[in-house]
Length: 466
Image (cartoon, rainbow, N blue to C red; front, side, top):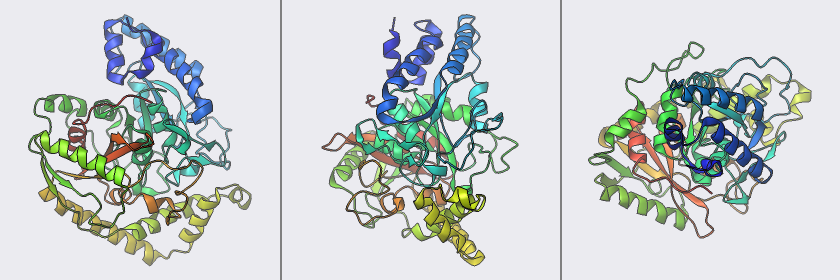
């Protein structure tokens, strides 16, 4: 029998197998995860709230269901954390901001959180985010700095930094994150775990993000198979989100299991190491990604070095992102604005100066970028790039010390383009640098081809937790 102290190292699928065979119970797993959270929280600051008593109550109910042979759903008894941008009934969603009151009834779940409850997941706590999820690292005036499990002096990345750090540290095998410009993939890459930004609309979102159709909801997990299981749970329509897609025709987890025999044989993969020389990639990152691409070819994929047909769309992204920041700040009074992260406040000032014509031009450029990528995917099933050109840098900074980048978008050129195009994109860990810091490889497919991303990602084995 597996001892409870070992349970924090297991995937969600392994936990479910243990419940089924009665090797251990959801209550055992939840107690182990809560103990792990208590142990790592002072060092990492991954959680803004720990829901120990509600989680134990949920775990006891799940244990009774499993003992009766009547599990409630696909994740019955599996501990899951939730990024604190997503509503969760029973407690405040603070969004990393001193402008958010913790008063009120807080009686509504976001769609993805509601689906977790329906499938019996145990909600262990809310994870940290920068203020309103505005940047690619996780620190905020309200909750302070979230740190990397591989080196607490380094950033966990962001904006789903708390979720990625929690999964990497064994503080629940699954977490819900959001991604508006890389906010799932950035911290998952820095922390050495799997992260998926699904096709826009695949996972409903309510309330709507101030950053509009840039913002996606998705899983952070140990590996692609666990992410597929979570995606099965949170996908599908919700009346509160009119942009949500209809439920997928097939289970992502089941399709991944069916594809296991053939793996990635025959997949047409384009490998772009630097977007045609546009991005300076650190040698250790470039070497690890190239070695991983070689593995894909050895497993039967047709790999060709090819670059997508676009120049850096950072100006388009900044226009839309700063407009979203302006929308956030516009709803605050002058006293609240003084409490904001200064970087968010500056971005909002830029956004408030935009004209309607500038916004329309950005939308046009976005559509053109999407068209170019749709054409690219006529030739290739998957585009592979580094997730980031660097590994995790000093915590408490928006950009690495001494770099030319002043904004977080200066060091994330591989992630935000695919929020503009609304494509599914994932990061998988493929190695570490000389300092032991994780390196991520990014996989991108055409819109609605989330299963293709998961299939390609499954070629990479799960890596040990920190």
